[in-house]
Image (cartoon, rainbow, N blue to C red; front, side, top):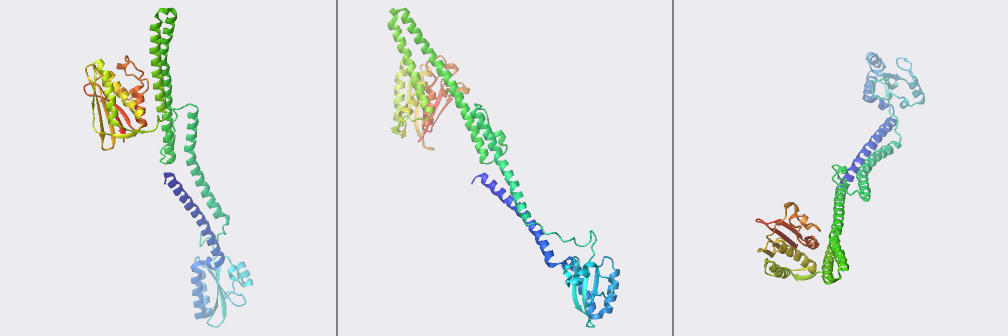
Length: 448
């Protein structure tokens, strides 16, 4: 499961905990109010009322009304003491004290539980007389227990849960919508042609799927920018390469019109330039097909060692005319299902390129072998030419690129570009490095 899942999970449970805490608090207050209503004012007096009534009951049963009078005098002098009324069957206090209004109403109704701050008990004294003991607490602000709470509304738990849900929903919506808005703005910018747009800076320190999406978007935009730049440069280079043979064709045609006596020479020149144009267009079509990922045909199983040996033999025969040689080393058999024509052209371009640039009187070394770990077929082509500047080792695989020390040679600069794309189409790599002592070494690695 992704990182967003855990963020949603913990946010959901945090929202539930907060909502549950709010609802629980409201329910607790509701229960407190219900408890006060159910138990009535006897609880409002608390333990003090119970202790006072218990003591008064003992005094009244053991010592009678006389002892009760003495005890009431002492209690009356105590600071902060509760009022204790001892009422006979007629409702008259033992001390003939006037009853407060709420106690008179409670006596008339026969229910002392209606008194807001009183507790009552029926007791039979030692002389057989029945009395009603009533403990009454006159509260002052800041003393005793607080007034009874009002019962909370049933809508309060719902409101607490709703507020918690709304707060977390808003927070999660903002957290999710912020990177989406950044991506939306970046997509608009890219669609308007601003390929340099990136969204990773606006993502901050996020570490989730949306941040991964932002990084993928940046890679896509960077790749698009590079591809558009390559296409623009390719169009420029193609127009430049086509302009020279077309100019020579126009010149040859003009010369033939001006001097018909040189028609044969002019036609030969036109034929030569037409062949060059045909080669250039063919290489451009091959490069375009490779970049588009269009396969050249169904794979065929061939012996790679034999293929490389055949290419080295043909290149060596051609190079011998200019005082150069191509030496091949490799034995055994390495069979693989590949795009035969495509891979053949890739190896041929590398070998012929080395044979063209190696110094006169030197040889090109072509080594083919199978590596066991990992299973890779490797071809190493080494020459003794001028080499390439370190900064140009990657650029030589770009279309129409020529190193500064090779600009006077023939060709269009498409051979190595086609070779790298052909090898990449097979999942392999094509790398170049300068040899110690001079020359270039190109390594072709093809996974088996």
